[in-house]
Image (cartoon, rainbow, N blue to C red; front, side):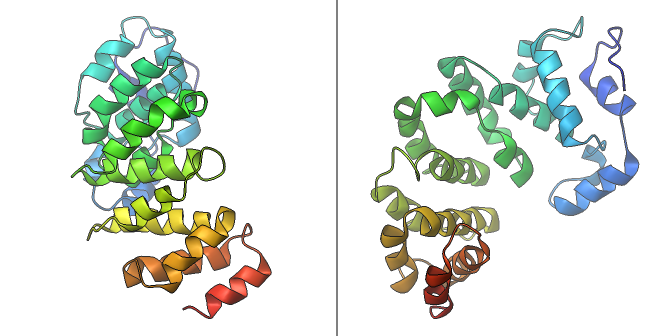
Length: 234
C-alpha cells in the first residue's frame, strides 16, 4: 500500500493495512495476548513503517511522542517501537529508549525482533546493561538479555562465565527457559568444550537440558560427531 502523507495516526496507518487472516494467525502464535490487539500487518511492512516514522515521513506523527506513549494498545505498535529502537544510530539514545520499553514487552516476537544494530559496535558498553537485565523480575527483560548474550558474546567478546550465568538462572517461566535452551544449543555449536559440561553434569534443570540437546542435534552448526555424543546424553 502506498504511503499517504495525510494520515496522522499510527493506528490509522495500521488499520489501513489490516489483514484479518494474518491477525488470527499471529494471535495463535502469541496466545497470551488478547486477539483484539492484533491488526494483521506483516513484519516487512512494519519494518518499513518504523523506518518511515522514525525518518519523519508522516506529517503529524512525532516519533519521540509515539515512543513516549507506553504502554501501546496494539501488538503491531509494539513491533514498530522495537524496530525503531533497532534502527537507532546513537548508543546512549538506544539504551535509554530500550530501558523504557523493555518492561512493556509482553511477547516473545517483540522481544526477539528488537535488536539494536548499534550494539554490534558497542559490546563493551552494552555488557553491564545485559548483566543487569538478566537479573530482572520481568520475563521478557530476562529473555532479551539472554538473547543479547547469544547474539553478541558467543563468537567474539566471549568469556566462559557467560554460559554459567545463563545456566544459573532459575525460573519457571517457559519463555525464559526456552531462550536458555536456545542459548545453550548455540553455545554447543560455537563453544563446545565449555558448554558440554552443563548438559552432562545436570547443572541445569532437566526440561531446559533436554530442549538444548534437541535443538543442538537439529542444528546444522553442530558436527555429526558432536550430535552423536549429545544423543547419548538424552
